[in-house]
Length: 114
Length: 111
Image (cartoon, rainbow over the protein chains, first blue to last red):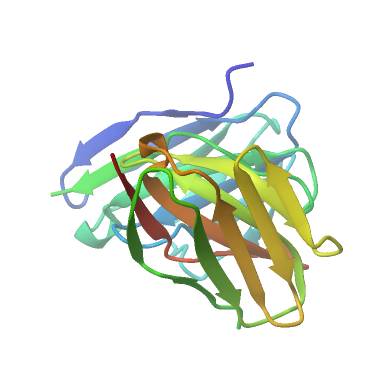
């Protein structure tokens, strides 16, 4: 297994367009997390899944954001009607199943909204 | 509300020196504390994870300590090398699974 993968690595879009990112976690990991990171800041928690169930959503996740993990494997994060303030690095992480387990991060998807 | 602060924000040291990075958190009711490394434009690499019941963890030249009562953790790097240059982030995991990151310390090792 090669670790957590994310696609695309970079996305440039115009304001108002919809974008979708994909995260493939480490295969045996039950938990999957999404974070957002802006320049000079630490990652901010957005949401996480235990298998296919979405257990927590941050207030940062407005109605324009939606995340899914339909079969408990890969996950998608969709942003509708993108705004310039959505420009950030979107990071995905996975862990085996509890808060006690190490989180393994993917390389991230860098979103630029023009 | 849990807040995580890292001091200093940036640090430059000559190669070979030992150094300490500091992390403080406001709510001692953490589940564990994790240290990460981030290279520019890249994702995070986990370095050390300290469970709330533990006092320290070691991996190679890295040693992380945890003092829950004072709300502090330190990351000690021995015999620093240019390849250690990166941003180091600490993250506090709460019992409700919220993970709160600090802003990081940008470390530059001078050859």
